[in-house]
Image (tube, rainbow, N blue to C red; front, side):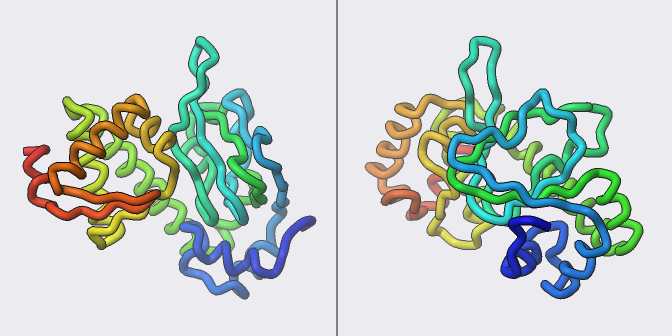
Length: 229
């Protein structure tokens, strides 16, 4: 594969598809199928919502912004994907023929693409990889359910509290490290960026959280939980 590096096999073991494999096992499996690597500069279009969903992507390097382009041409960032995360797994075997969102390179990045028919060959060659793929789909469904739950909350303050408490469980720490910028976070919660900042300042002034850059410390977990009760 052009542009493929030895270190990429280690990176792929961090992806959900190959997380139960060693770098050597990943190399053996990829040598048995056809795949390719593409690289993108910041701002490059990686996937359009008009593109046919024929490939599973795995990020080898860099970050990608998942965006929804509205009818008026305005774009909303739904999520930011990082190294070892998958692209297109939710739609690849669905009745939908195109990707649901548009994806741009947030910085220089490299992506491994596996054609759908080659992914099926991979499943036949290695059943544990099939199970890992199904687990990834299940996690995506759970994520979407939590997103719906968050969007259904009445206030911006509740949405922020819900997100922080959910991250506290996932990161197993009262110190939350945000995986994206404040703007992307606001888009993720479907709230205005100034409103997010205003509510964070309120929570800080109440002594419930503190924050610096992309790090937020939950200082009064019970107070945040009471917001959702």
